Image (cartoon, rainbow, N blue to C red; front, top):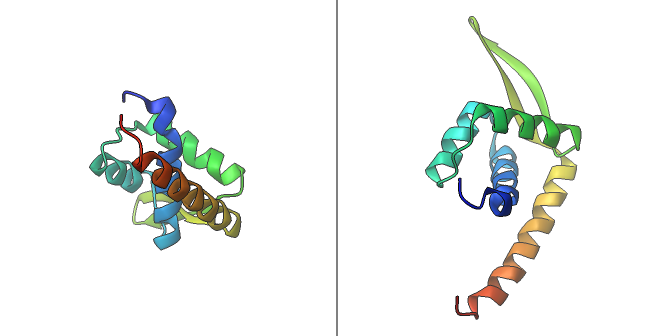
Length: 102
């Protein structure tokens, strides 16, 4: 994806947003992000989820339906706090950028 280095923060915010609404799994999140124009491979998505869990933004557990096992993630209090901070900063930036011509 072009400009992935600039947009990677938005991807993480999408993850936190959806993990605050309901439990998510990596494949569902990749499909959801694709709807917004982000194309992530499993080799990018799963390490990102693991890193976000390691930093304390997400917590996970393993779920099994029949022979299918998957890891489900949900947001933590630390993740909620970070998401709230990011949203405030994003609104401030959007307001500032809206007045500029590109």
